[in-house]
Image (tube, rainbow, N blue to C red; front, side, top):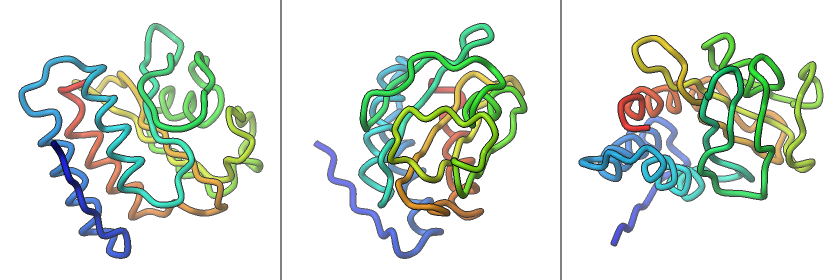
Length: 159
């Protein structure tokens, strides 16, 4: 049984604890889907004011829905389209304060107002993205981006 406690008021501590918890969850597990499922649930538990936390896996030139916590989502996103497709195509974190101002935003959940998408890279190649949505404009900041990038680095060999 896991019983994680997170201090969301202190972001450096929150992300250090989140990364440590993720390491514990994925330790010794070789199944990428199982690891993504546990980490998607962990993100939903740890991060306040998120209405969707999860993964898209890059298969060919399409992102395919992976494990997540939240409402049902878009199943396939073409590379380069929307926030997730842009992150996968560029290999760069996408920190979007207002998704309605993002050209080509794909609205899987109409309640989402801001988004953070971080690529997961193995040997320099994008293999998946971590996608976080919030119903609050400007929910995510640079500290969130750095924290999720640290998580993505830990997950690179486990998803």
